[in-house]
Image (cartoon, rainbow, N blue to C red; front, side, top):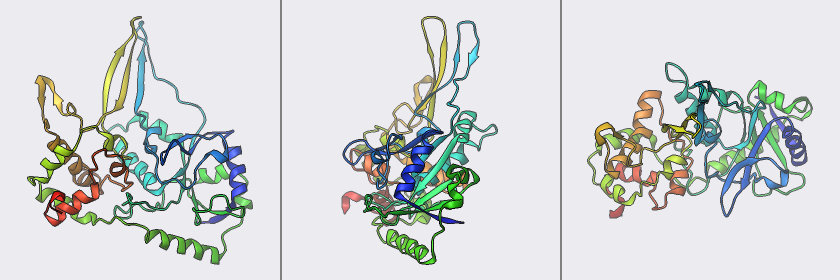
Length: 352
């Protein structure tokens, strides 16, 4: 894989030009320690040192709410069009790149792959960006701290603390032909990294590895859950959980959705798909008012089981990428890693 060098000024010029040909979204601050992917305006507005966005990039391929089709009073149905231009996400971190790969696997696993997901995914181009972990990240434990594929371009910033340094240089890895096309003629004019610069990139990678403070052995997770299905820990978590669903909504790989029909006064209607969460009280409620998981303890246990056991049995790996959003967002402080560490030690967090 070729590794090229691009200066900060060249990056700015490239993004300015790219925003004129595609729908370009970049990480931007949206409050105190809050970031979102927003349409590119100026280079000065984006934040290349962000840690995580509130909502993951899945919202671009699996929107929180999506009209599947509209039905006119005459009975004619139409599917809303998507923008003609490609959508480029710049600055996607490795954990979220792996999250999209998991979504790709899931939405293509049906007898008929999810057409709505597929058409959004087809117009998506991913430009990755290296990052440093904070106290909530455990992507290294989930083997998602790097991405060998799943991106079109990947930018390595080995000096993220100094964003405004005039001579700042990024290293760029080409992932796909589409990435080469995005760079246009720059791919042939940008210099390749020198051996000593590749050594500096390796040193940065080692420094990043040592920055992780959370650690988890994923091999113990399936057994930990299966052996402790009756553990009183789940009741304690059920009392602590508010069932707000924010952990699911912020998860890069949660795919639960609901389908509903809406009607207008003129006789038309729309079929809409929107995000759902297995922690909601009515998620498993069916006809006859029977609820398969009426208690929060059952719902939270089901979520942990699905992420680490059910998905792994179906697709060969857990669906958690260790981005830390569920830990960061939980209003009552439920800590994904500490739950499993507690199960592994066969004792409860409250006993510590």
